[in-house]
Each structure stands twice: as C-alpha cells, then as structure tokens.
Length: 637
Image (cartoon, rainbow, N blue to C red; front, side, top):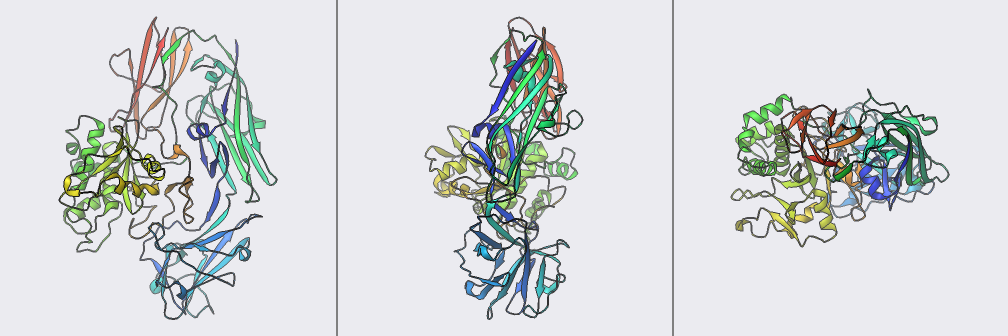
C-alpha cells in the first residue's frame, strides 16, 4: 500500500528545536548567515602574565589576514587584549601605515583588558593587514600573547620599527607565539550550515506517530529561500536505518539532486549557506520534505499519551563529558567520599543541593591568594587539596569547577558557566527535565556559606531563563531558594543577584581532570580571553566582538540529556521500538510494561500488544548506574 506525507520547517521554533546550526542566526522566522565576524589566529590559551611589553622604543606588530571584505562594509573594530596607563593618549596604533584615532571607553567587566577600537575601514584591505602598537613618552603597555610557532604573524622591534623579529618575543624575550589581537568586521560570515534532526520517514509517510512496516520509495526536498547575487545555499541529504546518525548504518551526505532513496527509514537534510560578498547573505524561509512509502496498512491503534515521548533537542556544538572510567574522576569521588556527601538525598535534585553546599564548605577565607600566591587551574582534586591546607586562591571559579567535576564524577551532568563578574554551574536535572543554574560560591562570608538557585512557581530556572527574566525585567515572581539566612541581609535578594545573568556563556567541557587543554590556565584571573566558550546573544544582548563562538539558538543551551525518545512501528500485533537518546557514557536502556518491573532492553526490540491500554515506559542508564528521566507512551488497541 502506498502512503504519502510531508513535513515542513518554516518557523523559528521549528528551526530552534528541530535543527542545529553553525554560523547561522535567526532573522524573524528566517535563517541567514550570522552577522559579525571575529578574525583571530590564536585561542587565548594563555595567562595574564604571558605578555609583551610595549614602550616608545619596543614596538609590537600583529598581521591580520582578511579573506574577504564586503562591498558595503561600514564598521570594523580592533580588539587587542592590552593594559596600560589610564591615559590612553600614551598608546599609538597604526593600521597599514595609517594612524588610528584611539578613544577608549570606560572599562567594564567584559572588557577589562579587552579594548574595542574603531578602525577606518578605508585602510583595511583583503589579505595581510599590519597593526603596530607603540607607546608615547614614558608610557608602558602590556599586550597579551599565546605561545606557538604558527602562523608566525606577530613580531617585535627593539629599535622603534627599524628591525623586526618573530621569535624571542614577549616580556623578558622568553616567548614565541601570537599576540592576542582580534579583528571584528560588521559583515556576514562566509559560510554556515543548518542540519535537521533525524526524521522518521515512514512515520511522515503514514502521517501519524506510529509508522507502518515498509520501505521508503521516494523523497523530495524543497527549499524556500532568497539567494541574492554572490550567495548560494546547497541542499544535501543522508539516510540510515537507526534513529541517530551512525557511520556504520547511515549513508554519507550527497547533494539533493543526486539523492536516491535506498529505502531506509530515517533521514536528515543539511543546508550549506555561503556568500562571496559578506555584505549579503542567503535567507532561508523554510524547508519541505515529502515522502512516499510502500508500506503495510497502519493498525488502528490510538496513542492516548504521547507528551511523554517527545523528540530530543540537540546542541549544535559538541560537549566533552568526563568519562565513567576517568581515573582522576574516580579518585575525586573516592578520596572525598562524594557518595556519602549525597547519600542522605531522597531525590536526585536533593543530592545536587547537598553536593553544592558541601563544595562551598571546603573553604575558609577562600578569596585569599594563600602563602603560595597561586591560582589553581580547573582541576577539582588539585583545588580541593590546596583548599584543605589554605595554600592558594579559591574564588567562585574554583567553587564552580569543583561542583561541576564532582557532579560528573558521580554520574550527573554539569557544565561551568561564566557571567557578569561571577562563575557558577549549570546541572541537568532529571527530576525537572531541564538545565538548572546553581551558585555554589556566591557567598564570600565564611559564617553563612550560602548557596542557592532561582525558582519560579517552584520550578528551578536555567541560566537562559534567569537571563531572559533579567533583560525583560520579568522577575517579580522569581525567588531565591533556599531562603537566604538573615545574616546575609539583602546580598542575596533576586534584585541583587539576577543582574549577574545579564550576559553569560558556558564551557563546552567538564573533563579537565583528563587534561587542562584547551582552556585558560588561570580562569578568572583577569578578563576571560579563551575563545572556546559558547556565548548567548539576543536582541538585548549584543555579541562581544572579541569572541567568535556565539549563538541565538535556544537549543544550544537547552539541549536534552539522559532521556529517551521511542520511535514506534506497528507490525500486526507487534510493536517495534527503536531508541534515540543523548546520554553520555550510556550503559543500557530499560523498559517497564504496564507498570511492571524494569527490564533491560537493546536499542531495537519488539514486544507484543494486547487489547486495551498498553503502557510502555523507558529510560536510559549511564555508566555510573544512574537512570535518566522516564519517557512513556500509552497505546490503545
């Protein structure tokens, strides 16, 4: 029997929840290449003591390579990480031999040593652009640098520009690398991609949630887009036999015009947007997928409950999770008896709150640099050992790092988050099915050592929800939980704390116990400069020009974890189930039928159905033995 159906993506919520994107942003309900290009040839993997001294005779030169300048480029900013006298007139910058007028804004947290200096775009050129830094009079400036041999675009002169060298640079001539100088251009990135979530083609053809047994016979992809001159958008397709991409079970990407279905049940489209003139961009309004199948007749089953079996939302960016068998993660868990710390909890969320409070209590006088005058790296065992002896600095960055890595060592999922003058942790809560922002180190008073999260109507907030509440001035019904002790007075009122969420970003890894690279050796010691963080931006939160990894896609911060999505297929009196999940360190799946006992099952299995209601529940279990949130569906036969 032939079946025909179609699926459309044509609204902002479709693209946010059902497709990932890199280098692409929303414009209303449409998609376009992201506007705002940050050019750099270093990652900022350095510390604030690794720097170049700039004086009236010692000059620094940075060569910036611009591949393409848009035909309508109107503004550009030079973004060096440089500090010096309060009087900016002692600094001189030349661009391709032309003096740049410098007017530095008042420093703010996100700037600090970062400077945003408007450049005359008429002096920019495609290819190499030389920027020279020098001081006037007795002024001394310090330019951050990152060590490395390539691309060899930084040089120093000891004789006021007469001769230059690109090695033995930096303070005390001990380095070789690149100055942390970035260039922001007000134009579109040259390319980007949008990838749909995998779709169940047989379910689309059947036009219902339960697919029939059969074979996909034809697919047709149609894109609705505006393609100005010098722009393009290529549509590609791949397909496979499993709900999520696997190179062993899926085909490679092929251009749409060359696509022939191989009968596979699952498929995925990709849009490759590009421009050769960064002043213009393709604009995508929608994508339509039509599917024909040769399938058996779908049984007249009714799904009484389906809200508990929703498709997964995935991030556009990969996250490096601590592995279950990480040696130092096990040391962290055992040496500090973390199972005992959370042992009294009756729920997962209670365990996270107990762990949060325990972390804060590991410090006395935490903001003191200690006798070693040392800033520990993001390594929880090292931080805790130093804290127990009060040997080194412990600030919000270290509290959050310890909490994040302790969560990971116990099998919970967490990520470190940086916002306005503060560092905290977000944890994935299976109890609430969402990310929750938690502050394990906001209280510097050792008498109270208060830790907290925000709640609205009893539901904990994520960082993004807290941010939106602040920027839209919508937090009258937001509360701090637990209630702050009276000794803290008004330091932990919502009005006092929530402005910290004005701008925020997340680290895309929690496996620093394996390696500290990549990242900053001394996170939080000065303005952040590592360019591997993921930053949120919206209409009220413009991107910072010195960082390149930005997103306005909600799913990039609110992706699903530790949950299952069941793809259902009917074959006579048999229900065929295929699991999809985003569970790092996955161990196995479990199901429960009609309220019975939990049973382990593979990712693909079959069960018989009976007359009446058939309730199927599922969950994923990770390598630490922690079960995720329960997904469920009730089928009436």
